[in-house]
Length: 304
Image 1 (tube, rainbow, N blue to C red):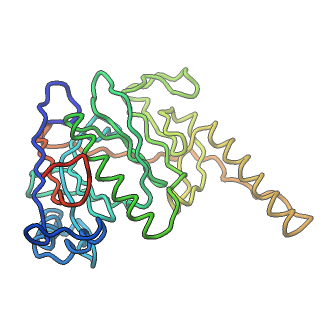
Image 2 (image 1 turned 90 degrees about the vertical axis):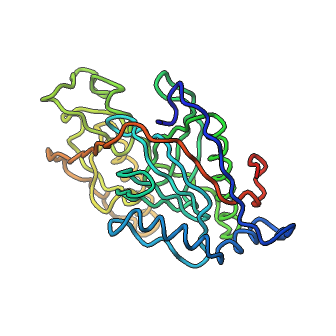
Image 3 (image 1 turned 135 degrees about the horizontal axis):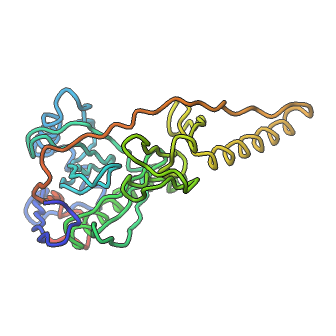
């Protein structure tokens, strides 16, 4: 069952409590999470996730890490919306492609929660209960099977993020990568508005603004270190803006260090193509069985 589609039923949220003991409550939410980190059931759940990803995934068991919940959300990918399995830990968000539900996953992605900002989005004709997960390196849109489920996910995520920022003393992230606009959102280049896409005229994405553009409008590459160690494809407009920003930064540095210097040049245009690969899921529908494990952590929107 794809999250966000009309006609999907609200899944029953299971909050199986990992309590300290009958009638025992930890002094704070952070103390509860610390207690859960040392439980056998938490270790077993994390090990089960590692086994599902197998050799293609990274180790997830580290001291102090707690698996708080899991569920299937629909991620708005470049080609089409696709079901993805998500695992919420107290410090990271992990997601991947579903091969066999609850048995085998691949294409693991790990996102530090300290870098995450959330933004609720309006419904579209195709997708309901949407929100954006924004980070400095990648931003994308997901949707839940129901409005209640979306509220629960966002509530858990925001509470974890607050805990981490309070613990580390960091400020919320303000720099976010632009989400890619889906291919089907436009039949023409979003920059020149002249080129019509077809089987022979392929779509490209600007890594700066996320627009769908043609090859002629995205021949340039520019180094954006927070996104990649290599220069990335950008559209002509973003390339000019990035060059201007680079020149301005260089001039400021020169005035501070040396009265005589020249601006740092940008990258030369390139006609090479990026390999924008897209995987196909073996199943279009999966059960939307979201499960959160820690009802005793004081999130008011959850019930045990």
